[in-house]
Image 1: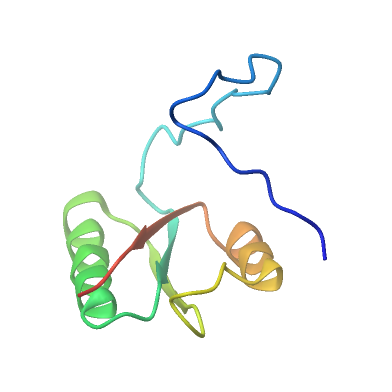
Image 2: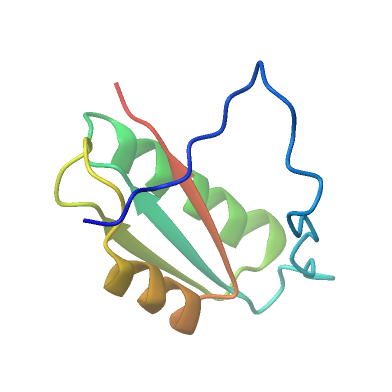
Length: 96
């Protein structure tokens, strides 16, 4: 099993890490939005409404919903890859 890096908010930062931000979209018009639901109650409802608002106000072309199989586990790498390949930008939310 490979260990994940854990960030300690009270410790020193790793200044050698690449913290370059991803390029930002200049417009949402015609873009495909990926929504990632963590599987908790109300997460899908919140994200669905957000997707509807973005389509109406900002002319987002398409909205694709993705759901984690269980909220307590990380996103599957294959699911992350699909979002990356099929969407121009993504939003995630926590329900409850």
